[in-house]
Amino acid sequence: MNWDIIEGNWKQFKGKAKQQWGKLTDDQLDTINGKREELAGRIQEVYGINKEEAEKQLKAFEDNNKD
Image (tube, rainbow, N blue to C red; front, side, top):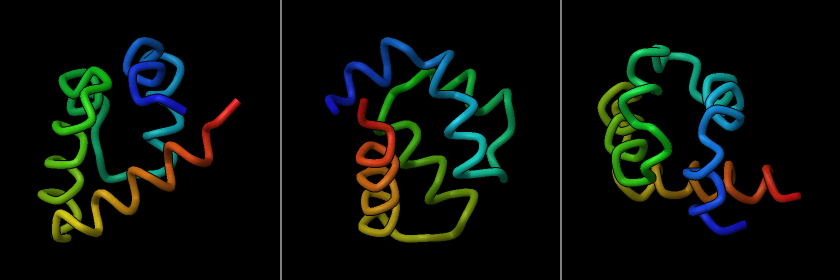
């Protein structure tokens, strides 16, 4: 799946992101608004992980939400 699809349909994917990364608040997810880089940065910050791990998690999220 192309990340543009996730970004374009963020309202639908926001709930799935909340399930995946439960420490992220609704306000944070609203601010992210589907932007991949912002989501990666927030995941790194909140979970205390490095960029590579955040990217790995985002890739898995993307792969798990294919049509």
